[in-house]
Length: 128
Image (cartoon, rainbow, N blue to C red; front, side, top):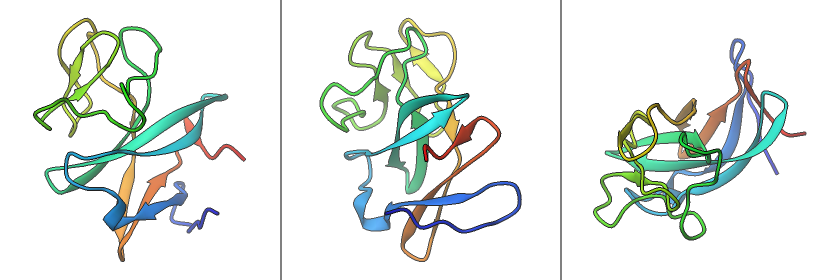
């Protein structure tokens, strides 16, 4: 069940408790409506901050996790596309190595009162 709050043009949508996101650990998945298409997205914690992205490699529109909700490489420093081995900066989504040439689509996130939220925008909406 999703809890929502209203603030300006964005709608924060409850994703999970803060404790669900461990530094460079497993992601928390969620679905979004991105420009009219239902797509998977994910949230991770890196350097103490929560970051959210569409689960879509820039090189080819394929999901990136090599096992369910695993996006970090072995070092815990980079997000990695399991198909192309492209590496992305977890804080910015920018591709730093491999066949990509761009950045992941970032989804605004916030953390307040022990809860993590993702935010709607003109391009990213709730599925229902």
